[in-house]
Image 1 (tube, rainbow, N blue to C red):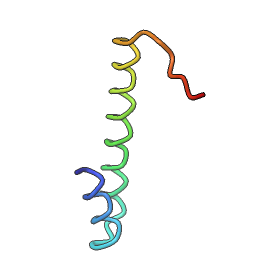
Image 2 (image 1 turned 90 degrees about the vertical axis):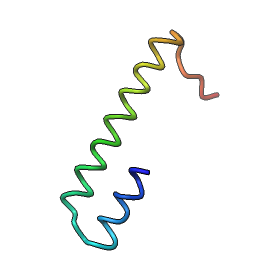
Image 3 (image 1 turned 60 degrees about the horizontal axis):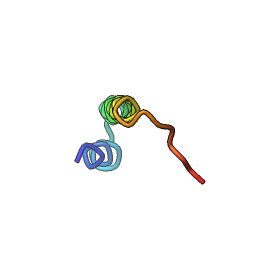
Image 4 (image 1 turned 135 degrees about the horizontal axis):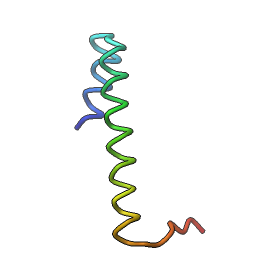
Amino acid sequence: MLSYYVAQYTNVTVNWGMACALGAVLLFTTLALYGVYRKVVKSELSLG
């Protein structure tokens, strides 16, 4: 849902400041959730 607003502020209203702020919130939220996941599972992510 947050990515929709990033796309809207970028393409429709051309408000780059708000799109950048929302993108940063989305990035930090994703990183925080990944950190919590690593603490809970206590294993490395295997990519291959």
